[in-house]
Length: 427
Image (cartoon, rainbow, N blue to C red; front, side, top):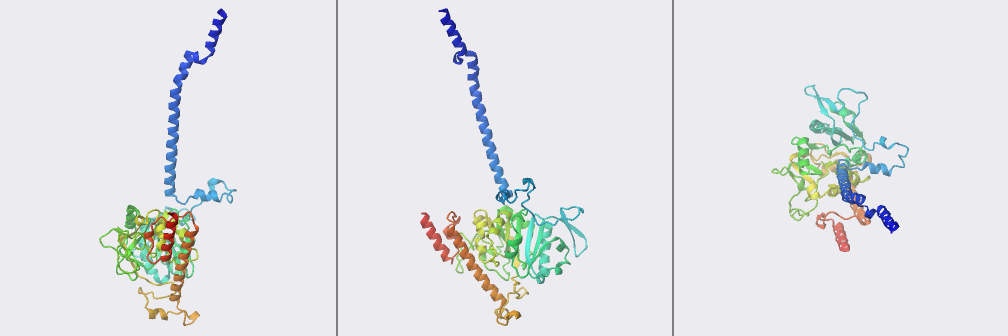
């Protein structure tokens, strides 16, 4: 009996479930461990949420996903240490030696001879220019320089030396290519990685009057309205006005749509697409950084006149084009409608049919009308662009038009029929 009692005592000492002291401690530790695990899960969850938000912020600040591009080309960069890779750049001139404030530019005023210091650019003004429009280009640049703009000129006539007498010319970027268009230059010299440091890109024509335009006030309106793609309104007396939506509304600061029952395109309350809403013209567009990233990819390398592209710019508005695309009325410009490429009248008036007929190219004989041929080429490119868009839509089975059927431009019957068929198939 004694041995049996001693056996039971030994068994109880070894059995953890009968060890009241240690078992009690362990039982008390279980709730503590549970609380600790829950706390760790919460910390991990909050960390993941923070990282997600931080990624979104980084994407907005730098939408070009440089890390992804580096990853895609990692094989080509395999011999470089990762930290040395600089995938983006800008258009700022760099001094050969340190001299004063490297973050500013100094220009001498022609009138007084005094030097005025302007900061380096956060914004970019790029224009195709010819020497015959030098006076007007100078007036435009004088407006933009004090507002932190970098200036880039595309010389389509090759006459670069004629600009040397302007104080700001030595600090501007000059690109020379004979008889090339604005979009040709933009596709080749405004790659998103090159202009990624600029908040806004003004891609303007040279024949614009800026007496009633102030870039700083314009940018404040664009920011407050949340416009990703915009343009200043046109003075009603401008020489060339192609769409009613671009005309200045005197009583508004900016507008996003227009109502018009004239012509083949009826702009009513139900109109949801260009040129009634979500539209700017190609003469003076202004792009945010993200919108330009999309627009640059939309530009066709070989279709240099850009006809038809303005109708599609709303797809690059980074959201609802009826809200993200607009025309600023309080800061407006005057469009002179001067025809430059291929010759033409430079007086500020649109050439008459008889004047255009007399504008011949002597090298090709009296039957060659340069302006007429440019218009024909533009029309051909417009048809090619439409065909490419429709083909791309048909081939991309995963793409879905973010805009409704009533956003299709009146007259584009092919695209309307295609969209109706696509909606029937999806239904």
